[in-house]
Image (cartoon, rainbow, N blue to C red; front, side):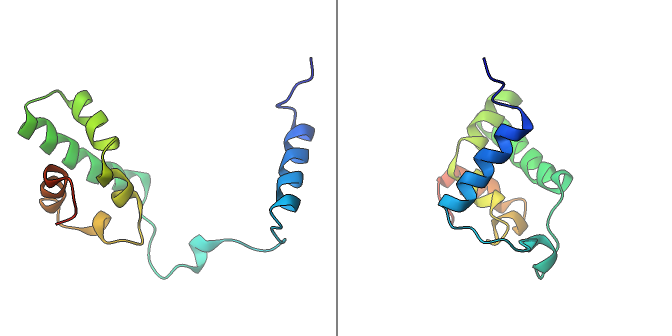
Length: 104
């Protein structure tokens, strides 16, 4: 049985996809080109931690249950989109949006 995870196979699949999708060769370092600081995983974790703790407290559920609820809610995509303002909002605003199930 062939090793599908062999680097030659991965390179071939990558090359085939790049050609099929008509992706040109170039420098796509959009992190260095952006006009603002990209939040670190620690920064993102702090936002989620506060929200998860708030949800657990408000809904009187465990932290793990709250974690699943938050990550599976609409607000997770909003927080992870750093081009929107949700990540940068006041920490008390995020639980309110979560509870209303919409951006308020």
